[in-house]
Image (cartoon, rainbow, N blue to C red; front, top):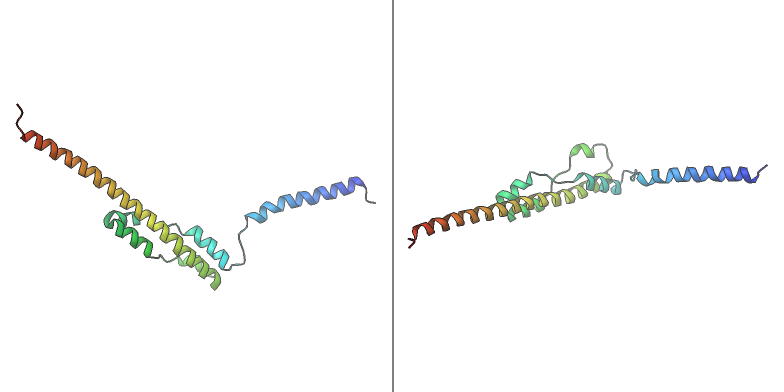
Length: 139
């Protein structure tokens, strides 16, 4: 027969199972292999390349623009054996996210070049000013 202790034990077991399973379900990503799963994976993988810092250093603001406009291709290894919806979501998200990352790296290069140029001009200006002052006779 069902008693208070038995029902309390059953309710406790059910609550324990629910409390254990909820965090596990929250950690899973969509496993349907569709567009949403591909988009999540593409956003996660699209980081941009640190090599674009050279583009920002050499081409300045034009390098930042080029880095944003050039959309990198996703790695083919990530797309092998996936559904067409997954590939579409992954490719779109990867290109968007990686282009933004590339533009950030190029912007860092542009900023680095600007700061370096300012320091060089200040040092050169101070040296020229000191040289010109040495040409003026003192009394």
